[in-house]
Length: 272
Image (cartoon, rainbow, N blue to C red):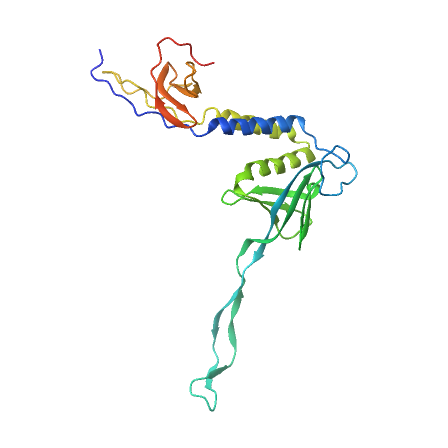
């Protein structure tokens, strides 16, 4: 017989996992079925396609970003003789050897133009009012989606400076996927991209940390999280999700990320 009963805190409210799942599922469908379009397919293509080239997507209002070096400065000291300028009260000049060095400024990503960013199975292009850029996938060194800012750096072997494209935060996920898809199609690595998306989808389905075990009985010690605990569709149909703790359904429910408590009749079948 239990010596005491410990009521655990409610599991953390889930993020908008359903929206995330839908986005990844849509990306998976595109990666599996879309191979681009050509002239005559009824799509407005903002660039002239080369032989065998297929257009994937375009972004208007994109920002061309290039790494540029800031202002530098001299450091060191002049070890010559200081002489007062005749006829002045305080002006002086120094005669002798100057010892020191010029320290160049740091390189940082700098927006330099706004325009249209287009993706194909052969290249990425930027067309702006002042600048144009072309990144050939055949010369690709690497693509880096910046974790702290909405822009992607694209390094190619035929260009010394790394440059890239900036975009709005709202569409960052879609644009980054479009870049990854174009690169994958060019390099025949679509299957790898699909596997990565499938892994992301699996993680989105089990990303919520499990709650503390509901009961502590003496003399047994506290039991850890149960395998299989997760948010799942509410079997009662009254809410969007209900917490399955690995053994039974709990009262913890949520709809649209808003948590609530709703008792459920016992012996309801577990989630599939």
